[in-house]
Length: 194
Figure: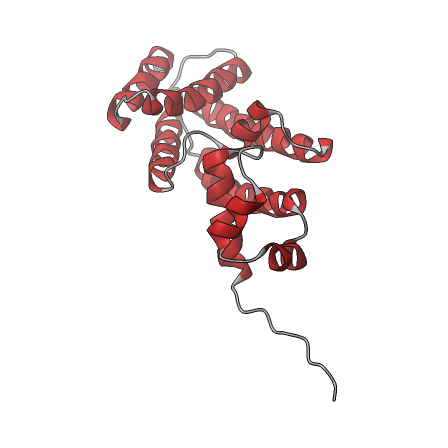
């Protein structure tokens, strides 16, 4: 009698989504294999067989997060992007963090905790932040080109927006409402307007 391979009884995409949220909430170092088992409902061996070790699983989660980020960045990369697009991006980020009960950006969280075992994962996370900053710079440059914003150093402004966006998550954790956090971003953007 020939033994048949057991068919997977779970949706890998759903499991990756659950793991993404878990890593987003707790960071890389804050997630244990027991956390992964509890979140996914899979045993350790099933997780390893399907996704590899924790590091390999996180690499797949980071790919998924990057793909989502690319979708979220599309409005900032459009020809009609501007300062309002940056505010809309911030509002969307805060809403996603609220829905997922997360604070801040996943890649910033894992870069901040410094616990990524593979330097390549850290480089990929840093590349993700560069893409966001480039998209912000594009929106600022488009706003200046259309006369919506005063000329200025678009790269520095983009970095300032990036820092502010991550700071909005800190304000939210400190108990500031989403609308007040966004008003803080407005205070940054308003002096650039024409």
